[in-house]
Image 1 (cartoon, rainbow, N blue to C red):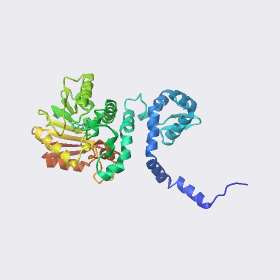
Image 2 (cartoon, rainbow, N blue to C red; image 1 turned 90 degrees about the vertical axis):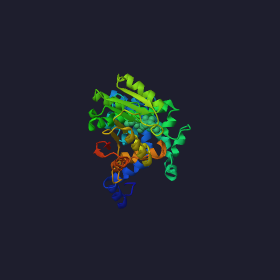
Image 3 (cartoon, protein in one colour; image 1 turned 180 degrees about the vertical axis):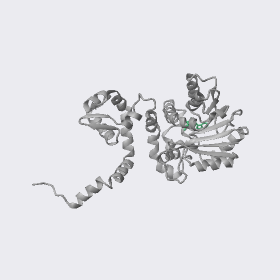
Image 4 (cartoon, helix red, strand yellow; image 1 turned 30 degrees about the horizontal axis):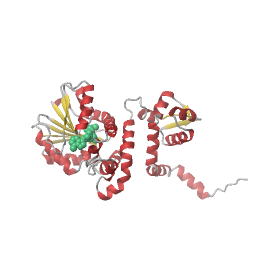
Length: 360
Ligand SMILES: C[S@@+](CC[C@H](N)C(=O)[O-])C[C@H]1O[C@@H](n2cnc3c(N)ncnc32)[C@H](O)[C@@H]1O
């Protein structure tokens, strides 16, 4: 005799939960537990679990716990989370990486996204708990998590070299992949000298210079970032064609003598008014026939997504500057025309990116 009753209502509900409600129900869990799921992945990344499994193939719980140096109980919790999230697969008592984890979270792969995970964890995570206050006040209240008198995250990171390194490593990880799209989409052979405004550690211009043997390029960024860029350029053996100039894109004029001014992953940081100011300044600095180039992840013109824009925009509001977001191609193109650029071209790319190129 069964100890359980089986009300028809429960049976129907289970059927629904396993069929048409499965997706919405998983969706609400992913949203509700987003912070926990992120921490599950970040913990596994910091334990270097995915690199371990990439090397060793399949492993049991006791083997994993011993290899990463934690007790079996917490290891079991991490493994449960990673398996439910689709980062690990469990067959019998053995775990292995899924394709996704092996592809993105194994340290040995040159295009892993571990620097992005560390940036999210060490810089963005605490700050994003301030999103509500940021939305109420329209300012980046999350910046209070970092000490310093400056008004932007970039300024404050200059006081925290270890965090600035984490930040720049993440930017490089994102940019190396996406800037390849820029290099493929724009014919840089028509330029003599590019100014890369907010060019970071120089990885972007290094990539462009490798493709175009006569191209010169200059990073224009804060003093401490230019130090990183110079070292990077020197290590790449390109110091004869690439350099960096320390400056503030709002306080200083852009240096003369360039025929292309690139804003890569830069305009999302600022308000519409400031971006319009930057484009007017670029127009003043460029010779006739020169071009301004905006390269970024883009929001759909109709404001319906994509998820990358929905993830990035709160970061700019809550932490980075309190004024930026991911704008649409249509907005950028309009600002360029208003700044005086006569021929404006919009090119949509994969990975939610787009390029807007305006010729003076
Ligand atoms: C999001 S990162 C983009 C880096 C790089 N362009 C890329 O595509 O990966 C923004 C960069 O802008 C720099 N930055 C922020 N404010 C700036 C300012 N007022 N003037 C010049 N550079 C600035 C930061 O130091 C940082 O390197």
